[in-house]
Picture 1: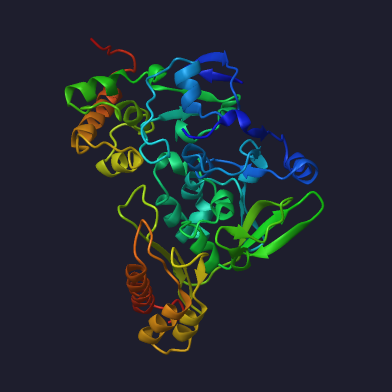
Picture 2 (picture 1 turned 45 degrees about the vertical axis):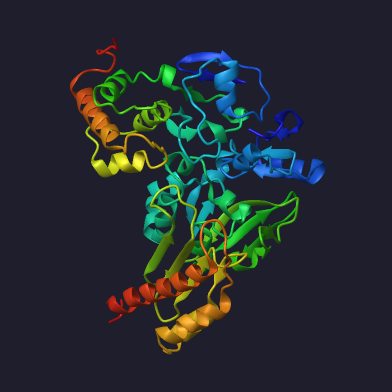
Amino acid sequence: MRSVVSTLELRRPRSIREALTMLRDDGPFVPLAGATDLYVALNFGTLTATRFLDLWPLEPLRRVEMRGDVLSLGALVTYTSLTRSRLVTQRLPMLVDAARLVGGVQIQNRGTIGGNIANGSPAGDTLPVFAAADAVVVARSASTERRIPFVELYSGYRTTVLRPDELIVAVEVPALHGGQWFRKVGTRAAQAISKIVIAAIDGDAPRVALGSVGPVVVRARRAEQALAAGQGIDAAVAALQTEISPIDDVRSTAEYRRVVAGNLLREFWTRATGRPRPDA
Amino acid sequence: MQFTLNGREVDVAAHPMRRLLDVLREDCELTGTKEGCGEGECGACTVLIDGQAVVSCLVPFAQVDGRDVRTIEGADAQALQRAFMDHVGAQCGICTPGMIMAAMSLGPDPTRKQMQEALAGNLCRCTGYEAIYRAIGEAKRANRRTPLGVESIG
């Protein structure tokens, strides 16, 4: 391990309120939960922060519940608990599909959706799901709570509009109509970081979001409009190419990602149009 | 930090940000848990916290406060260990403690798919996994027939 831990500070609040007070009065801190991203950086010696706030023991952040017609997922809900949740399986099956493909069992037992969102990797597996689902991020500070549309959360590569005193406490997903679809393309089935990842919902107003094709998760509005307007899949794929900006990196090439992004949109649309409509 | 380690109450003083892996190996002198990649990819350092498999290289020590930690030394996995020997499920051996800890979460008579999913986070570059699946399959069937702890090694 390349980091010197004796220079690091870890605060352990016993309640959400105490955590928010610490953020306000003694911050800044980097929130830490399952540590599946932060401790990789710690190992590499690339961790820039030195002060951390341990959220892992805060049980109220693990709730999965319905609030009216909205599915509310606490920030500390792990991938394992997503796959075991009947509510999530019923309401948001594409998130269960995404959770099953994150790392292996050990990572799924520790990684949280709040962490996946806050880490903000362009390859984060759950991010296209939340983008396609029009999810809302609930951010709380000691004095305020605000709801940020997921698609407005990221201001750039791994940066968010969250203030230093704010904590992601939950993600809210409205009722969705239409079939959900998730697909991750990686080097192998398990333990792979995505070369490209897609989540989509069919219906009269199809919704499509992709990861690993730009500095932040991309909601493919132009492709959606082409599909909704009946312009055909070729036009939609052409539109998609104008709204993604993939790069060459250690996992894949920009060219490959462009081809596969188009292919995935085609696969989604073939499935969507081949499936009997609920109202047919 | 007070926690339960292999069934015993312990109190270990260590920096809260140290990796659980290092505290287990260096402070608790339990070197059965191996470090492979140190970045959560290989599963060699798998231990159980409250019965759940985790990679101890990515766990801040502070987070075992009040929890139940089980390592290969206290795994009570004689049937699995015997079957790994019988089926040559271990070659170089560095993945083996992690493999066995990850296999602990499987129920009796697991399907091939269940075994593949349970071990998806454990890399072995020697065996090609076939011998490991055979070993786990046999151990889990044997476990169903005989109570735990009846078999012993050597």
